[in-house]
Length: 139
Image 1: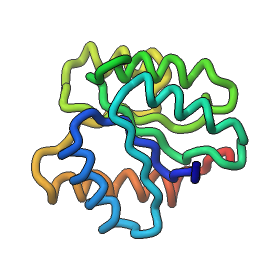
Image 2 (image 1 turned 45 degrees about the vertical axis):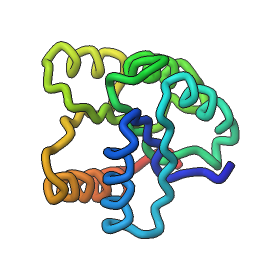
Image 3 (image 1 turned 90 degrees about the vertical axis):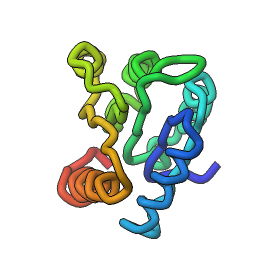
């Protein structure tokens, strides 16, 4: 399995395709891996055992089949080789309880999915600039 720059868990294939298209506009070289189910996401994340071949960013939808985004987040933060990878909850929910729970379980950010392609593009450009160009990670 080749290592993605962004590991994205999203159960809506249409939205995942739109996000993939937008990511390609922002930075063509970014590798994006998309998984639709929470349990499959955990299984795939467990395969990233070599710390030199980890995703640089994990995006999680909140409401997923199998396991919720919060369940995946909790599991990620318990895995020694994954716990320092930035995790962003990326959801349609703007419920303050969801935001609070995400931070309590170790999310690095909570972003409400924007409406419209141009707004999504702006949001993803901001994420890319911060997490890939400005932020100092451990790798």
